[in-house]
Length: 357
Image (cartoon, rainbow, N blue to C red; front, side, top):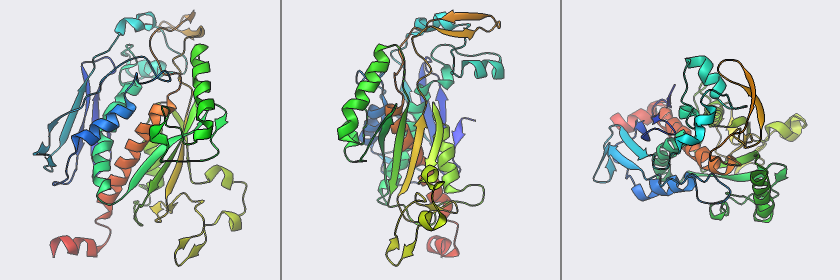
């Protein structure tokens, strides 16, 4: 499927080397001020070609709003946005026209559909996430009205883990590092992989602050389940951790339980979610990105005729997708929270009475 969300729903379209990519965002309440400068600023964070730590593909990623906004305000109708591809080099992919890149979606797309767009991967390319960032910016504009803050950054590159998490520092870092002291080592790990024609993985830590209590639709639309769904839909994401899920396995219940006092919870091992519903604490998640599968070392693979061969890839690819992936993480988290806020409006009669009585 190419759509996500229920009440606050978006659909993306387009391919990596097509004419354009875009999105349609439906369910945006009328009267929301649409700040195009804010949306473009989010696009600029994700766009390629900004530094030596990213792919050399250079795209302006200028967003155009084509419907659903009048005089700077949402009209309640679908908001459509588009950005045009300007820097495709499809010839870079001619050597893999009939070849499957190891660990890439080439293989699965071909066997599912019997055809694939080999130019950058088509819909399986991470370039599709540019449309998600545009959609997420609309969601964040709505969340801003309620003081809900969505932040993320890099907490690990390869084996180099951050010791401190400073979400206010991350926007000033070329790789959105959360730990200023570990930033240079993490950058060097990316550059070393790049110079060796290889790639590395990374971990993005997400924090959502000022979330109201009660978001989440049990049993099958739990907030943690929808957030995990959103994160796992991002290219190269292979794992999600909510709260202290992994370390919590080694704790006793008496250690892991978030005890409660009149002024709130004493700890936040749950990551801000209990029973699939937000409890008012910060929502904290870790999102694990695998090393970029498109690397420039000789590799073993097969072609569409099931013939074995060795090949070397050409083109422009990120040596680590996690830094730009953190921008997409923000967008997807914003979209989930916005959707859950709208869904929550019908949870109590008092909510409906405020509107209709």
